[in-house]
Image (cartoon, rainbow, N blue to C red; front, top):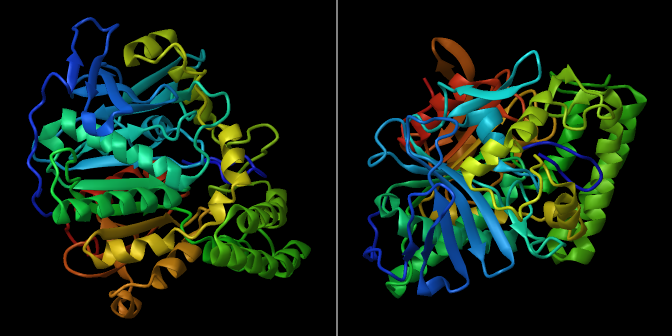
Length: 490
């Protein structure tokens, strides 16, 4: 996924307290068997929102799947692709996956990381997909949502991005979830988990905050217009959540850690150590004032002053084991080009019901990335949104591949240890325990609480920014244990 406008960077259970209204003529306006048409879903409670969907058979024809759009008035249209579980759809939980950026498509996560199929290319350049045995829909129903508008095949009638901050984007995602569980009421009471990567560390806390607040409002004032979203947990993978801790942490990672890219006494490290305190001061100002004027300077300085130096190492920011010449390949992974080629095939667009008004598919929209950066969105503190959520029973998992420099494991471990919550002291005293998958060391885990934990941190060995891509078996083991609340540690 991408971070900031300076560099092009890749990412990527209580019962319901409200009854489920039956689908009626107001909710389902039309349904056709012809693949060229959509089924339309709306509801009076969301007058400006409607859902249109169809049933493709791409990627994995062994499970039921849907793709389509959330239409927001006439202005914004969010693309999604949903796959039922390969296990027991009616019993398995619902997971929503979000790539980051901002501006990166969750379809990239689907085809490159954790979806039912994996992108491939023949020697003659033909792109195709193959079965992924470690897909996250092995035991979960999974939604891949491209948001905000202008990401992936999401589009807008407005030439400029209609959404430029994470809190704005979260409101639209909540409306999508309401219409989705209204259409697919079999999932309405299933445990719901938000899984997000990279800049998703901003997206997920904002979305979870809205869902949790609305759920509490429904307890106080039940309404037939809204359904309770059965939010159970948040999963953050190599995520940007607390920039004040995470941005400066890259200095220790790059200069002193086990995967250092510079000699600790090099001029690059001296420069980084000199600039990091300035970055911290700017982010502190952003945290204190929390507005565009105070946060944009931190965005510009921190990305330019720190990552401008790191760019000289010619390493893949997302997997420092790999070289990367960003002049030749800004995103460092050729598979991302394969995803773009596949998603732009006419037969794929037709099968998915891609709207003719949608732009050509790109994995990451740099213009949107810049729009968010100009609002200073990426330097905001989204960790503060997690305290109330965690203290009121929503579980939190933070996992990090240890060879990712972008959102490195050192910074991730530090911010979650400092998360204000009723679990803070106990978490700080909890030991790191081994995590083994198929009799091989897969990482270390630190946790507090019963089962998989109320707060859990996981370092994943030999994995970069995209953990499910680098360690697919381990990532699936992590997911399956987490959503079933089974301890990850041996």
